[in-house]
Length: 418
Image 1 (cartoon, rainbow, N blue to C red):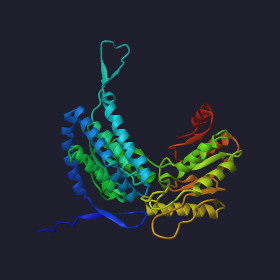
Image 2 (cartoon, one colour):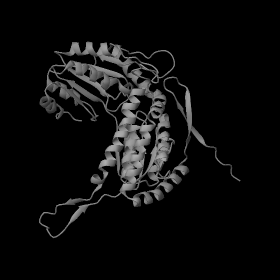
Image 3 (tube, helix red, strand yellow):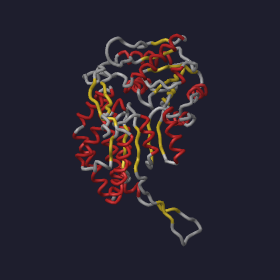
Image 4 (spheres, helix red, strand yellow):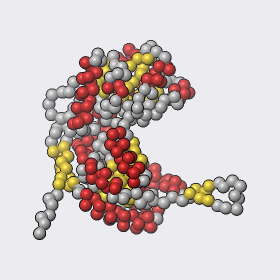
């Protein structure tokens, strides 16, 4: 008689201390296939119950989440490293708001839409919206709750079943969210959180899911899109960024200093929409740098669960190595780190907020995604030069323009490839 295979587990560690927080079951390919079969059956029932019942359950989830906001924030901060205030503002509240928004509007959004047939006056045509079926969500570690759960809520409201493969570094918030759905009365087969190895997520795509939503690195995104394309499975993805900011000479510097620091260093810079490079007009360059450096020097880096901490550790030790390497290479090539620039001694995956000057587009910290707490600041003379440099990137996710003239800022923004 064959021996039953032992369960495998994924360990979750606190990036601020290195300590093991918990371990979660790692699902095998066969267990994922069984989960998909259960989800398919549950989806047929969920689609049939109608939109009013779906709204009722999802509304209830939003209420339960709000009741458990403190606990959820603590879980997120402990496994991800962002400070408690950011866990509340960037993870929990956005899902509470999104849940309220879509439950209030989903009937209108999904209502049949008439199509004008012009001269065929005696005929009628409509777009009718039907659920995809079973949606696979592959989520990242930098926003372990808000990114996947926004997709979860929308997919469920539209009548789909959901399988969520969380990042191995940060599975606990996703699993806690599933518990909150239990309290809201959702069928456990309809939405399942399935921690597993990354390769098994690819196998799940091949098992026949109906839609894939991926958030993560560009390299992995290419592989996911290739696989979905080969299998003709529709997919959506949000990948890397190297987002530029252009500061025009008439910008309000009080706004600029706070926005640049927040944009670069919130969540220790681990945001796809982070400001990863700033272009500042030469007439205000020195003052902007001075203001930003002064503000960064007032930031407190430390344990994200401690009051008064402004920036916690990085989540992924591999990403920390990338940040360290990019900064070291830039300094060797002539850049100067006006703040930070060196990994501190002691426990935890910390890297200080680092402002870099004397940088150029030959340096990896300027042309390649950093995904960490760095801000290269460069000087420009003409607006055309700033736009050309902002567009000199293979990435095109987000971009930012600072000016006291909204019309001029909009004209510049429309020239940016983002």
